[in-house]
Amino acid sequence: MAIELNMPLFLHEREAFSDFIAIVKKYEVPKAVVHCFTGTPSELKAYLDMGFYIGITGWICDERRGKHLRDLVRTIPLNRLMIETDAPFLTPRDLKEKPVDGRNEPAFLPHILQTVARCIGRPAEEVAKATADTAAEFFGIRFEEL
Image 1 (tube, rainbow, N blue to C red):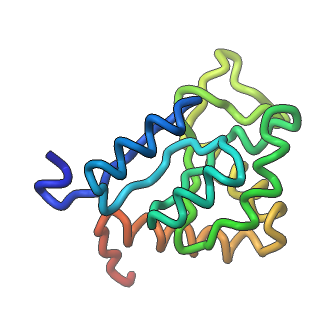
Image 2 (spheres, rainbow, N blue to C red):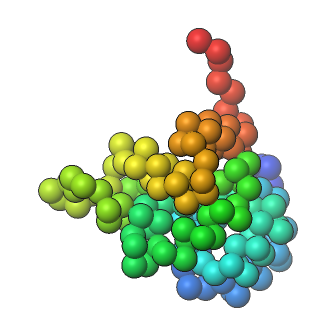
């Protein structure tokens, strides 16, 4: 339906790359974000080659499971990078003050942003503006100047 209505898709693939890529190629998905990307360099390249956007969550803040993302995020063009929470899941593991109930919240996006900015060696303000612009373009949001 989204393809018929020319609307962007928000896609999630977990340990099913081969099946997933076959499906999106079959249906010629024109505009999508791969939500909560945690894959390999070759998977990232395939998604970028298809024109997809890449969502990075608090997974990158996990020094054990997200270590590989700290290198991979450098290869994602800023105009294709989105920063996500995956709330209520994937609370950044390295938060100094974790919520008592463990629930992830959009309030933690700045923490994820700081980690991404450090990983790519760019100022957080630059990454924040770029990723906000990317999300606005993807979803067709127009911000009016204040």
